[in-house]
Image 1 (cartoon, rainbow, N blue to C red):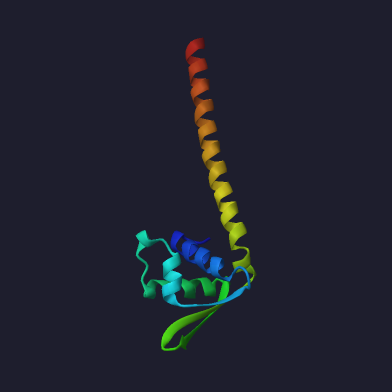
Image 2: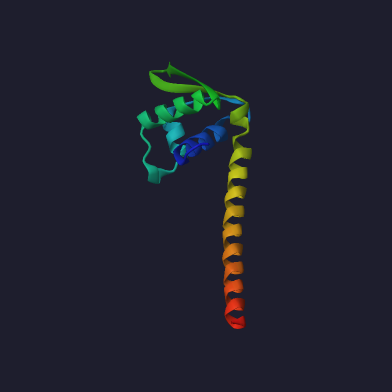
Length: 118
């Protein structure tokens, strides 16, 4: 299961690589797709990308292109399934919230009915 930062980085990688399955991207381009309020650094990005590569979401190669660091990323089956995973996670969260609200309403109604009876 991915944490929030890993999920955000994987979402950005998926957005870049979804059409062809492989992409050549610079750290600056990848950082520009991430939320600005989190203040990702290049070192954090390297660490997160390495962890996602270990989890077999994609293959990661670092190289130099015109003196600038670039990543060659090719998606693996887990990487292609990321969008489905994210959608399932949202559905599970929504069902848990709905279940909690329904349980609270039922508990309130049972309490109210018991109060009326006794």
